[in-house]
Amino acid sequence: MTPYGDTAPQSGLCRLPNPLAVDGDRWNRITSAVNVPTPKSGVEAIGEWKRFPLGRRGGQEAPLAATPLGRELGFLLEWTAMAPFGPHVSAVSLVVSALDGATRPHTGPPGHWRLLVPLDEYPHLLHVCGNALFATPWGTALAIAPGDLSSAGCFGRHEALHLMVDVTTQDLGRVPGLSPCEWPGTLGRRRFGAAQLAAVSGLGHLLNDANFERIFDLLCMLPFDFEIDVATPLVLAQELAGRSGRPELIDRAETLHCALLGAPKLSRVA
Amino acid sequence: MASGRPVEEIEPADPSAAHHRACAHASAPSEPVDSKRSEGSRIVGSLAFDEAVVAGEVAARASRLVAVMADSVGDWGIDCLWRHDKVAAPPAETLRALRLPRLAALIDAGFSLDRLRYVRLFMTQGFGFVRPHRDWPTSEPVFTRYHVPLVTAAACLNSEGSRIYHMSVGEIWYLNGNLPHSGICLGPDRRIHLVLDFDPLPTPDAALRNPCPGGHGSPIAKAAGALSPRQRRAIHALSAIASGRNQVQIADALGTLHFEYDVACEVVYDWLDAIAARSGDAVACSRASELRKAYLGGP
Image (tube, rainbow over all chains, first blue to last red; front, side):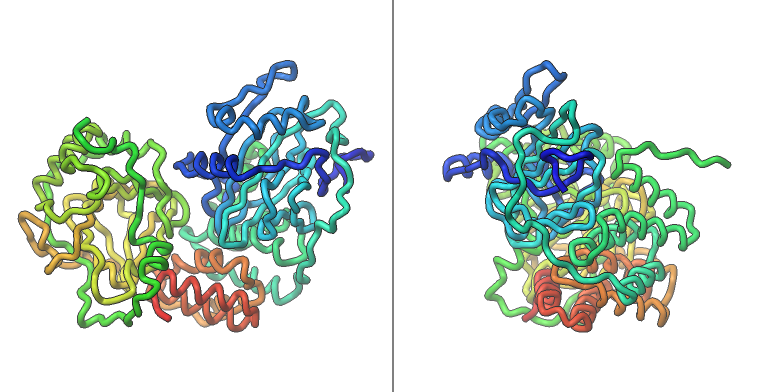
């Protein structure tokens, strides 16, 4: 799976040409800047993730315009601009993970690669993309291909910080400057068998209005432990809602599904 | 703005949050809840006010960025309006400066404020709930808390042990933080409560200017009765997917069942322990135990 040149864009772990190093003073500035209330986490969040926009490019020929926080943490935007993919960056954000949290499977902006760049060594920050579980050692980036689903999870006692860089190029098969990652990257998981499927089916007996989204979140955790595709929780949730026979739950499952995929919800034909 | 630090700089804090309990009471041995000694939450007074006017006044605050309520799931937030150790100005003066004059008048009319610590708005909507928890692990209270519903709906419920109840606008509720409790908003409606925390007081109504015992509110029956054997098997079958990574999500998936079924709110931590034990995953067992201790106290 390579974003550095292939016949079709595929997500994968990459080595960064210019690893992002953050020293003590800059860490202090970052941690101080992110210790503020933020808008409520998006529909993809399980737990409280914080996302801080740093810069956005208004058009292909426009410069990357920094937000006030982006100016305050200018070294992060400078790193982005200096990277080989810098000229193709459309948006940069700083993301602070939730503790014991994850994200539901979701896509990035249409027509963009999404690079997830850890600011430090976080063995407890994991990502699922396709049917693979990734650690992202410092110096690497997980490059998520346009339209691919991914989930992130933070499973430790400390928050993890990463840059989220959206890149668009005319040749969407590659992201300039990224090279194959020599680290293993992917991690082992358990087999998802009959017992697991029975456990998921059993959730249908516990499903009600109050806990639908909570059960959905539990399903979204499965790809971190079991050898299933990142999209499987979406299917399982729709199946549970469908078997409940309750139109409002079916509708909520569909609404979530569409929101996470960035797809319009289809109108039901009476 | 009166003397003292501007209120916009007040750090939103929730002294009852799990992480605060874990830190502050780490050395305090916890005691089992003694239901005979610990009286349940109840109505201790009432306040008459124009609901629409006050709702409009707090609506503007509700649109601000606020701290997420610790221990909450979904759409919950805390807006700290005044705290005793950060703001020198009196609460009423501070609230008026925040363009909350009617709220200020409400507080002055209803309460004697000399031992007041915090004035906050607890806000939720859209199926948000607070994980079942105790506010402190021993029988000695850490604070005395009152809830004054400002905006609510029938779908907004609280629980205490096995009991569920609704707090209505116009009521002043004393909440016993020593008992396991939870709260939920079972729909898209918004719920905004004024929450006042005092130093531990000798009686539940000690801070009220005009105490008026009102009982425990109208009883609310749980819609679904007892959990079926099939449902209990489904709960324990979660051991097949339990891991050290998803204990919080398992707890949250099960944590609202007590609003519908005849189980106590704190039983979710028994389930978590049992599920983890059946899984044979040592990390899951350890994490389940951590969650129980963080939310209910105990060894």
